[in-house]
Length: 148
Image (cartoon, rainbow, N blue to C red):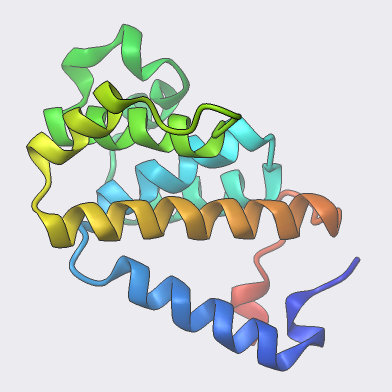
């Protein structure tokens, strides 16, 4: 298993970028972004880690269980959460056509410019971590943050 800690410069840069992308963003919103992207990317390692973090932050287990079907359960998520989840899916599944204008417009309508930048940066960061964990075959349940 490859760990980014084996490449200290890369690891430190990723951690710094992760911290910067989280500043000023509600912790629960950040966890929803990380959970949804990890579900879409099939990253069991990150999903386990961020479900644990979300529970520790006091998020409701039933709400967390519904993240994968958030669009069918809109009453469980605020307008901001729905916009962030929709944008997370669009950025994570970027494809050839990019993020649809209507998706970006809904996010822009509920986040100010700084917040929107933080949401996008958070989505980009969890996608980077997902790709590292999936490529490195990280097992669910391991939390290498706790070993440093």
